[in-house]
Image (cartoon, rainbow, N blue to C red; front, side):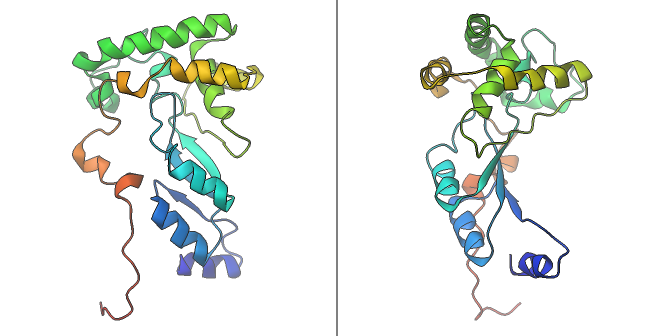
Length: 206
């Protein structure tokens, strides 16, 4: 952070952001130089950041950038209405494995049913839910297809009240989600729960 702060002071960097940082790391980094945004996975079926990270970001005035807001394509139909090719990395994701995807399809069906109620598509409803978590939330859905891009933009037109957001949240109880959000125990170590940086101890020589 000290080196990034220097780059800002030199005019080479305008803003500083973090990805998958723990609450402790965010707070310590922000004390060195204001953090503009923190990027973390956040979607209807990945909400573990809501208890600690989101409140901290809002306390410090840090923007929130959710990646995989459509559940790595699940709420766009991956594994449900579209087959996940065996050659794709996603085929190795625990939530898309045969023993889990059948259970998770029930979650998709609930959101699909609610999407009809709100007169939008299933991915639009899932993305609108993330978008409307707050004015400080800017999700980054990824796609390689123009039709999906157009559909994602359409999520901006879906208006949800507090009661609507609650109804949608309750349609996806976290305990009902089958499979971990990480590809493996190895990749889990790179997420915010394990991302504490060691304290700066000037007495330790390198």
